[in-house]
Image (cartoon, rainbow, N blue to C red; front, side):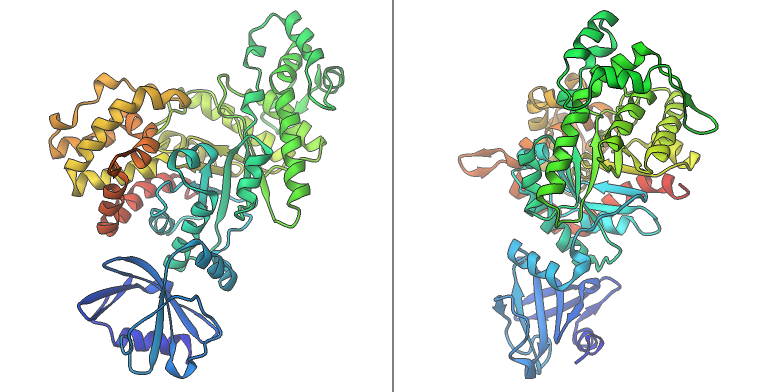
Length: 519
């Protein structure tokens, strides 16, 4: 029996049909089938369905095929649910089954994206990606659906496998066949690489920010030169760098030229020399140990105190190219402030001028993409980038999806949101230490002082957004003697109100994606 015939049988026997779902009723139970997930492999129809206990992977086939070629060792379903001559089984959406799905359906595997515009959707909960996928309708951006940093994994107590599996199930549920990336974000060590490579990630974002010497921009030049000559940067030596760049003119394009003097070169070398060497080591480790995996690499220097000047960008990228380190994207530390969860703070004209220079460098030395980190809610920046239509861009978001989950909870269970608000306030000062935020805790009201409407207004408030943003790990993992403080209620609320959650996310990400529509 063909896929169409099996699907037609299922659709015909259902009690409700709409564009997204098919609903069955049996033995007092209701099963809702995600219609886009219906996929045939050999003689078996696969789909994801949801009943009162959760989501599962279903396999159905004609009863004459009792010895199916495919088995997931799931629970056999009662006969006659889908028809007298159709048998089925129900399977958990677990890691073992996700691996099998990736084997049978190649579109559920992450892929290398390459030098095209892309958008990173960090899904800290593991249930937001179907909405992320739906938000892409009409957008040319290629999604990175499995994106989490080491810090996020630790704070949410998830594994790299958890993140990739959640993306796989989302892609399967939505029948999304256009390809997606898997970004191992902010990697600092070779053990970080191992953690994600074993799970099957395809994009590796190196974060050598601990090797940036920020004081290089302010030290007396004599001290800079002395320290530069002593810097341990592998085969990159100060005297060689000085001769390669000092007083040399580099034409980026018809609009921009770089002409660094000896002092500029010395400061750039001290600031970034060790960064380049560490990135080279990580790159060689990845490419040598995991040569069988198709991978791409981003370099991130955004989590530093001092902006990356156009010459510093050129110096880093050119040295990496000379050392045969191929990058697909680079994240500079831009001028202005990219705080978590709120719009850009800074002069947009100054940003535009520097961004154009960064793009020119990426086109000259790559081409590779310019990556925007802490990209959540930077709407004014999106408009600039979309308007100038130059180069390629990658945008990373994560926290904003968590905030949209909280917004959903505020809509459907305001008392739970009040509890989360008060707890987040109590944890903010400790949790903010590793984030770039400026929220003032006293400006955020207590839960009991907020009406239901006021709770929703908090998601338009700078201070409240950042308090919520940086405390996600504690909210999702904190326990007392009885179990999780919030996680079970948090997830139950979103799962029971899935469509509201999805629509809330879709609306928010349409605002993110639309400015890039003509990029």
